[in-house]
Length: 195
Length: 315
Image (tube, rainbow over all chains, first blue to last red; front, side, top):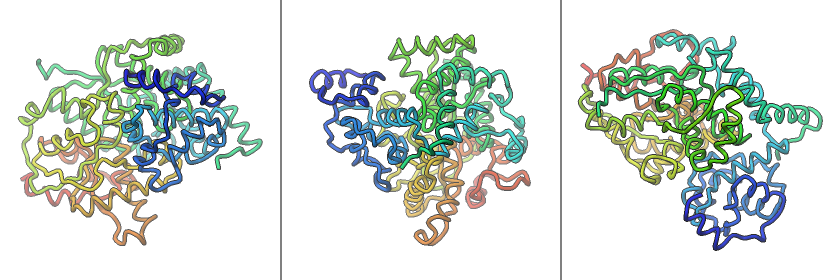
């Protein structure tokens, strides 16, 4: 938190915004959200809001009001994290971080797009890359590497199985793997989905 | 300072090695030509990607990034990445942990379980930052052999190389930085103005993987503006932006074919592919001339119009 934010917080923190959702922001060190005056600079600066239903101002207001419907709203996944709202906020609130935190809370509750779940579970946890070059499907990419005089697999986790194990251990230690397993079960059972 | 003694840990990420290996080749070759040592960070993983994995679980993002940073600490060098997404992650985690000792302790507790630790002693850098700040234009200009004076370039910065500006090394300039334009113009090319030049490509923030057609809508807007300004080529400093402009250009031409009338065919290359060429590095190695028969791989948009334009200046 920088000094300008601290000043704003001292002066104008809105303690009346107090609910389960806001408590999660405060616990994560993001109390700045309570300094929001809903001016709409974020929405005005948002290139995604120009073409989608994402209204950052409204998403933040819903969080402040404890309206948990925002968690299953697909709009919060339209943010491209360009950071214009973060830079331009007159109250110096790191707005993009608030959107990211909202997404984290949504995922905790099991709200995640199928594509994103698949990427986390079947690509990231398994290979520790987000885009992989292993497997039969990716043969052409290994050949492309070779055509540029590079080893068919890069010197990353792809070449070091023990490094994959290290990353997977970390993901279990911080309970990310367990969260994904829980979501997988839930997805099967009640097809809980984002609207 | 003896600039030829510089060395860095090369953080590859995912998109560069696994989809745009010609970018990896061009960074390695340009740095070698400049006598800068790149040491591979053996066993590095995904940064993790700030749009997707940070959105899913911040703590996972922090500890995996700290593990990656610890790899370069073990070699006592700064990590350097060519990807804005990786730069965003490595730099933000580095900054955030420096400003939150408790969080740093918590992250170290986790790292200890795999026998690693993190101090934060080494600043994560971007390839462009090394070229522009650590070396500088004055130093680089001595290496330029060919100048492309007829070339009109649309520069695309992407978002995470400049923002959040408080966590970046550009004196908090985020509305209209010029460092990438200056690097491009070092090669004699002209960086042209176009509408909303600093607009996002649309790929980041989990948007491409979540809602591809929304990402494509961003890209369409940029491409329309770039075509209007009559640019010959798009220069990026991020492989994910490059993918979005390259493969995405095909997607845009398909999804919006009625609206845009004529399909887009603007070549897209990475900054070290351009600089490498002007330094006299073999265009085959830089990925500018197709040197294989592999189908359905990058680049998806032909670079031939670009090569035709600059051919005279290479002879």
